[in-house]
Image 1 (tube, rainbow, N blue to C red):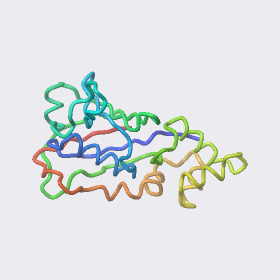
Image 2 (cartoon, helix red, strand yellow):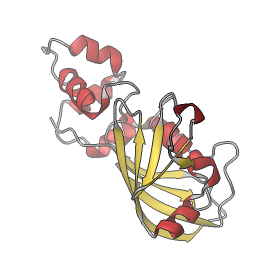
Image 3 (cartoon, one colour):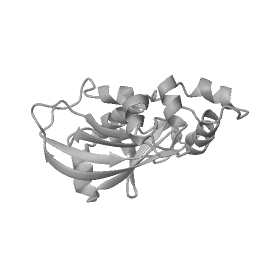
Length: 197
């Protein structure tokens, strides 16, 4: 069975704060924002600093926009790490920056392929094991996988085949299509198109 990673393409306001971009990722994956995270541009990390740690942590993501960081670091790629224990690491590449359409509401998902891993599913390795068990009704952990990864019957049928990429986004990413505007996001003069996995 193919275990393709989740890959998404989206457009986001270039002036979005990094903490709000984190909220977009959380919403897209239907995660609960209950773990630490960091967005890294080279050696520069952004997150929500915790003064109780007593050491220098990431820079404050609430005080930086995507536009500022892209200009300051001169990078078109960054890493998003969520849940330091499970280590969900996403690589994001800015494909282009252009004028935002006044007829669209940002951020918006352009395309998505692959399955959204559920929160606390053991990171990429634990999730791969759950998918393997899910695809094999004789697997000793098949029932446990069914409980931890809720899927429709159509999605389960697709999962058992290798010809499923186009159907993944229709059956396994239904909530991604509704990720448009979160309260408090800025209007967009410019938008960044990005691809990430």
